[in-house]
Length: 280
Ligand SMILES: C[S@@+](CC[C@H](N)C(=O)[O-])C[C@H]1O[C@@H](n2cnc3c(N)ncnc32)[C@H](O)[C@@H]1O
Image (cartoon, rainbow, N blue to C red):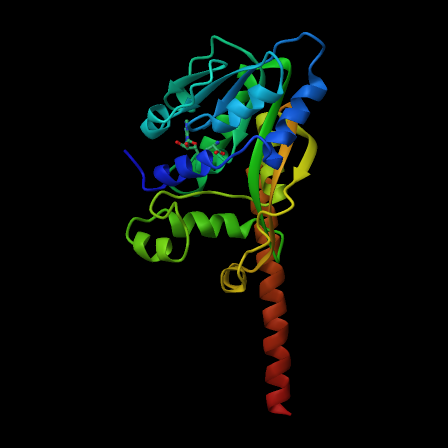
């Protein structure tokens, strides 16, 4: 199915230049790891028409990048750079016969959407687990993502954005409010939310390069209802780490029960004080 957002993704890609800070950042990361004369093989997941990958290949000597993207528009507008090759398809079903020195996931993980919160988390984790299998043992995963920090530090904004952007019924309204993925769904996370997911998929964060600009123009009328303390975009470099077990369900339920008891106790105390005051 062709989504409304696909045309926008192509337009955005066309605007990426060789001098773009994110191109420079990723090329810098790869050049710092590359040994003299080494040719690096990379995979760009959701790399669209290949503009970003093409610039990276220009700046990193002897590098070649395979782009996998499920969009037919990406195939139609694909870059002519011979250092690139294109696979049209869903990354989650890509065959695993090759291994790569680096994998780029540039603003794509938040598009690995399923039906609702749980399936979406499972899809994002499956994408990361697949990237782990496709990386050489000393390979690097480079992820560019958006981070939304709420006032309570509970990764609530990403959940709310998924809840609002997924239903087809309210698509026109949500699109008018500025979401280009209205009716499709996107799932961003807070820093700790992404970090936990990476750890469960077997990745540890080595470095984070925060964008100097993105997110700073978040208007108050959008920020306030989301109770957003801060949003930012960053490029993370990650290497393989032991897979960390998800926070056990039993421990999560115990925490929930504890919080509920504390809330009920606090409300009862408040009601009791109010009752005594009224009686006096
Ligand atoms: C926001 S765009 C980013 C494009 C490019 N990485 C960039 O930053 O300019 C997300 C891209 O990921 C692709 N995509 C989303 N889910 C995918 C999947 N499961 N497999 C392959 N491509 C996917 C979309 O078609 C789209 O081109």
